[in-house]
Image 1 (cartoon, rainbow, N blue to C red):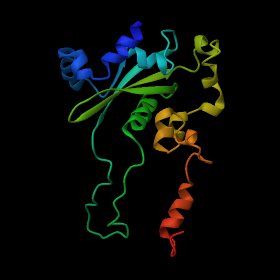
Image 2 (cartoon, rainbow, N blue to C red):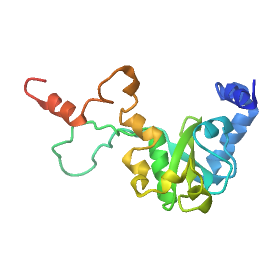
Image 3 (spheres, helix red, strand yellow):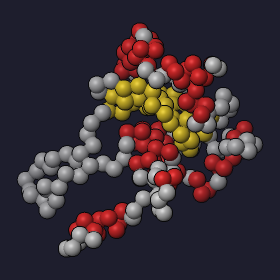
Length: 197
């Protein structure tokens, strides 16, 4: 097997594969700030598969996010709103939220992709691949210069990254479906319709 296959095999069960290093990393990462720029990716095989290259204009940021809290909080106030009894769930996954937070921290860059790194009882950690779209090395790269086009501005907030498409239900194209997913507006109308169709 090549080097990347060994790395991939180690990350199938990171607690067993990394041993004490896994726990040492978590102890260190809990003490750090939620958004940390790092020099090298923790999972080199995954980063390379998602488009990372060790060149100028591309860098990695590790983002921490709290687990839980995907349900809207109970309203604390002296009123009874009309939607008080509705339990609304956030329609975004943790990975997409992490990408958005990093995009706000680095507003002049674009998010290329991201991958899972670790989790414990309280947090998730993701590493986000960021591209400086104005860097000359990126503009000269035929594989990455598409990110500099105006049509790809703030793509993470429009759900155009891989994590965003997954949260939007656009991953079932290859299953023989005519469309990627049913229309959300049509589904909402059907739900509140008198006849249910």
